[in-house]
Amino acid sequence: MAKAHKLDCENAAADCRFIVQSENEEEAIELAGNHMRDVHGQDYSDEELRTDHLQVV
Image (tube, rainbow, N blue to C red; front, top):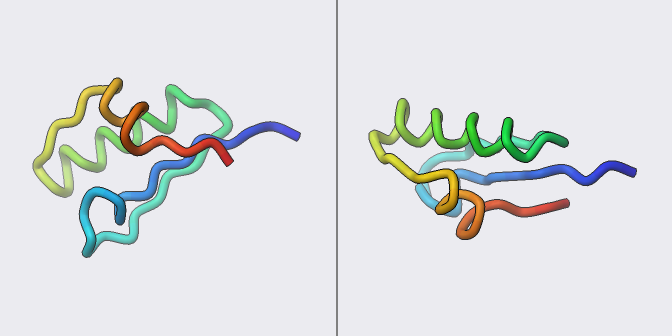
């Protein structure tokens, strides 16, 4: 069974329920980074998202 890479925005912004989940780690990181920038006006590096927020499920 393939692993999924999941980022839950609620971990970074308590009032947001956005979740991205993908079998492709780079895609999950890109989508989460775009969401944080476009919706919350916050820039996270790929490495910050990967080490601080990425879950493998």
